[in-house]
Amino acid sequence: MDNIVWHTSAITREDRHHLNGHKSGVLWFTGLSGSGKSTLANAVDARLYELGVRSYVLDGDNIRHGLNKGLGFGIEDRIENIRRIGEVAKLFADSGQIVSTAFISPFREDREQARRLFRKGEFIEIFVDCPLTICEKRDPKGLYKKARRGEIRDFTGIDSPYEAPSNPELIIETYRHSIHKAAELVIAYLREKKFIPLER
Image (cartoon, rainbow, N blue to C red; front, side, top):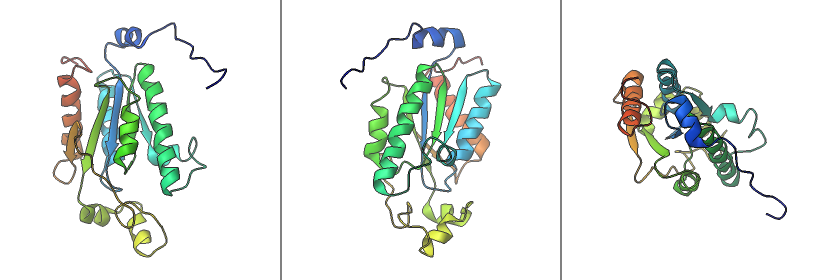
């Protein structure tokens, strides 16, 4: 854009990695409402905290209380919602943290657009896989009932599509695993890819 010039930071991402003792990136949790994205993201965050890793969770509902409070749930607003989250997550990664995003993010292209903001290997797409029947049975916020009654329009899984990842870094089946086990699978991946040290 005219008259806008990127200002290079004096402290690099690698400097922050060295200071923190671990790498940074994004854990992009995607899945249907009720699949366990927020619960799992927070369980992973708690585990990272125990390990002395600098981390943070960006949760879909929480973000809509502030940064994205003016956005609705139509397709255009959903796209903008995810675009903003991708940019914010990139800032967290630049700051040296491991940031978890817990958003339905139903469209593949939106997730791929977010991926393109990151260096190779720093975007970890985690498909929180849970059948619609189980998500609807859980229905922790009562949203599926409202959608079935027609009180909520364009609800993902009911009258709006969810495009499952075609090649995610991780698939976590929350209908098969406890949250503790699911979180450990994510931690094991981070160790395997050397985001965090093996001995922590």
